[in-house]
Image 1 (cartoon, rainbow, N blue to C red):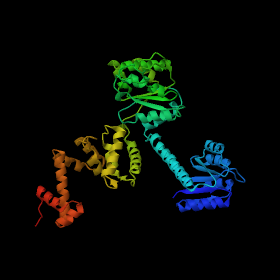
Image 2: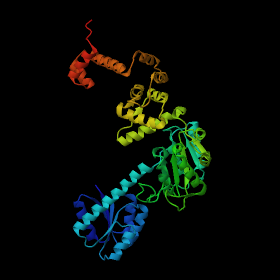
Image 3: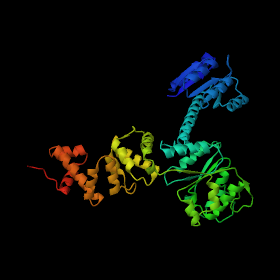
Image 4: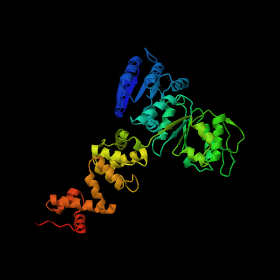
Length: 469
């Protein structure tokens, strides 16, 4: 139920408005002066305020101005018995949602209130969504390598130094770039990201520098490039090792002269951009192979930050995994699940070929498919759903060793393939449940949540027989 406040020094107006609005199921409070009205606004979360303009003690326009400082998103509907166009314009300039005259028309009043509430809800929802989308995630971990990265970011971010971020796919290079921007003097300006590996080589120059209409076949209109869009802010060139040599030459010129030219254009455009670059390649080897310019490498590599592989900082996995658990469960609107000690040891033993990105996917999978507590068996069962983490015999042994289950690991060698293991596990599970229920098929089917006919088929498939000895 929406909560409304009426501020008006005329008792008759307050009573009439209150009666109308309460009849429409609004929760309404009223007060006869602006000073007390502001105090109520400070203490109570109102969804909308109806405020008279001409009042004793404090003018309605002043109430509006003061309220904007306290709660800038609170919709105000101004009311006046001497309404003019000039008054309505002035109220709008000062932040009022709308203006109505006394005595208020019933339909106009209700429509205006409804629209004001809708606008307030939209503002709130937009802020929540923006915070979710734009909020830079924390760099999680307390290992020596991560602590060094955080310290380097604190030192380097406020400067204009270019930074080259290296590391494997999924290790968190983009997150480092975002924090370098967030903590820089350019934080209020845009951060423009370009994935050089995702753009065809023949289009990368147009993407970075823009193009003029008619400069090539598909150039039907002028296009602004990423360098211009990032002007005053930061340009993040991800996977720069995949950039074509011709584009590298233009990027080098832009870094040297702070000027660019659009494809097909002759005019030079000045740009003020801080460039951050990232790669998962060995750029020195790429230089040897003739795929990357040495002069560009030295321009970009003023400060180098290497993001380590997740397997190089396994002590950080519990902290990262717990953060993912809380965040994903919150997104799904479900209670936060737990990982027991064996499950965490199993996670730490995995090879993590996809780094932190793969860990995130793994945690999401475990949340969906496991019970309230995620165990070592859950990690083992869901570690390779058709091509994720490759958990072969050696990795299984690592997991078992980490959690004290070497005997179980040895038993895996008796199975030739995954289907054999699944059939064995299914057979043993059904046999155990049948014996537990004294071979009562109906009760067992209910307990393991399958149809009775399906259970009979399983019994026949696995050749299960009741022990009559």
